[in-house]
Image 1 (cartoon, helix red, strand yellow):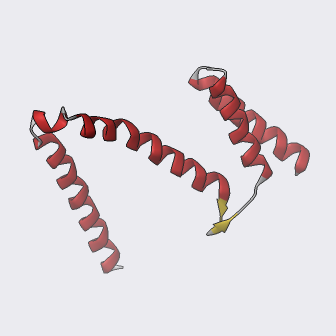
Image 2: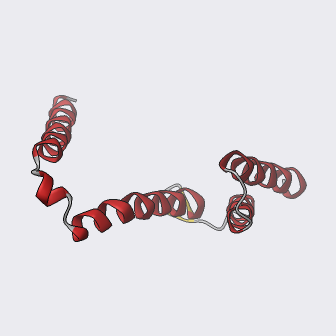
Image 3: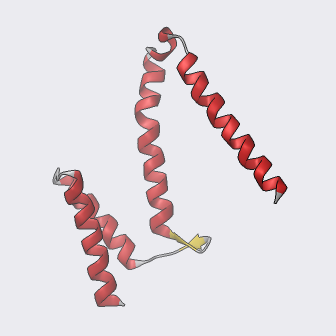
Length: 104
């Protein structure tokens, strides 16, 4: 248990150091086009990875849950139709719930 707390403390310190490094970075570094493009794309890539992990894995392995997949599909369709964020969430949640009701 002690090792776990040391790991948590180390991760906290690392996160703080990373945040401090970002705040201490000179303006010319932040204004560089490569850094700017990286800062725009990384959050999107991380969110996509989190969604993929949540939708297509269960209990440490790959899973093909039809309800989650249908909910993701509904969200994609709503996004393609340029629906507002809350509508996208409602479409995904509603579709997932309906599939779970009808498929068990």
